Image (cartoon, rainbow, N blue to C red; front, side, top):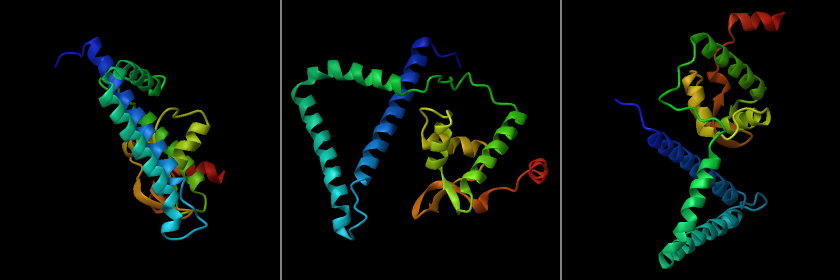
Length: 195
């Protein structure tokens, strides 16, 4: 198969940016709706805020759809703005999937051990750690900027770190790494810890 042209590479990059942008907007909207839940109330009263916020979002989306149907020329402004936002959503350096070289086996093993050590530290005495908490910790330390939970889940799977769909930590259930699934530290790491 021939190499992709520059235009095809740009289109792939723009598509990737749009996926990231949609993912980010979806997460922010879902977080905003979830923030409407009242912990001091029970039953339907506790989620009325969530229902109201979801209705506001639905009304806003319907209003935007109506406006675009009524004045389609507004797309001349919205499409470039959307493309600009998609490009801004990309991480600073996006590797081309076709040109990406597989990492050396030693680097992968070292990455895996380093990540497992961090996960063990974050778990502490809890049953596990959510991927969102792991990602936040990495971003707070200047790594994984502009990445999402799905990216770290893919990375962990590639490094053969077991990820569960439902890990319960502090009463919340989400994707995470459970303590029981963690492999034992490598002999060299155990020797270093003992020393």
